[in-house]
Length: 131
Image (cartoon, rainbow, N blue to C red; front, top):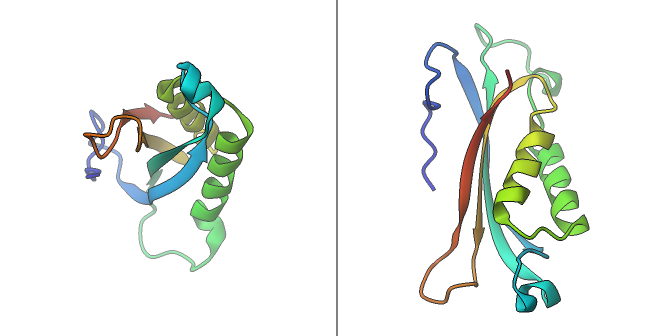
């Protein structure tokens, strides 16, 4: 996955990017009967843009977003709910992540890894902004 440092359509806001790459989880996701009865592997890539501050700033966690907290929230969301569509899961995760108003933009990419044998993965990628 190749996340561009330039977010679509917004070039005037300097952003720091925090990312979570290749998070593999077992999920209850899908609309077909065999998907309803089984869990399957999904891979998530999440990129988060936080408005940059000028200068180095203090070396403390409170001035940024904790990717560990985001990973924990993603895990909880994926493990607690059956989603029919990867699109719905992506939107749900983006909405939850954007509740932190320090976050300007989030990209969520979700792939089902084992659903079509001839592919490495199939899925969806979305980008959402805090307005």
